Image (cartoon, rainbow, N blue to C red; front, side, top):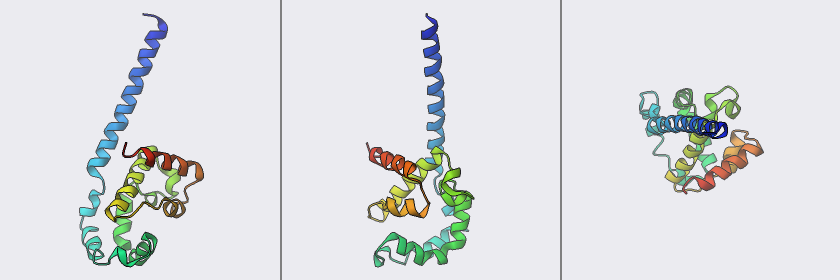
Length: 147
């Protein structure tokens, strides 16, 4: 076997290990996503705002701004325990890693779907001060999410 072929195989094996490791970490995140919402600090609070109908508001932003004061303590707990939220970090998105970003984008898409609405990326980009380059990466990722 040539040196090139040996090096190529080593390279491929290392890449496979790295990507499998990422896959395992993503699986863990999928299995444990938002588990803190079952906690005493969050569950009752979030259930109590369920009677406020989202369709009574023109946008998710209006709904969120209306309910936020009612759920702030639960939100604080949730953000502290869930790193897929920019609020988990002192400096927001810039401290997140790619796995955090992937989970965050999946969370956005799922939340919009559960509300029977289209994901408003402009609102999210503005809310979290996401720079144009990362905005484009997120939009590219959303295009392939259901492939």
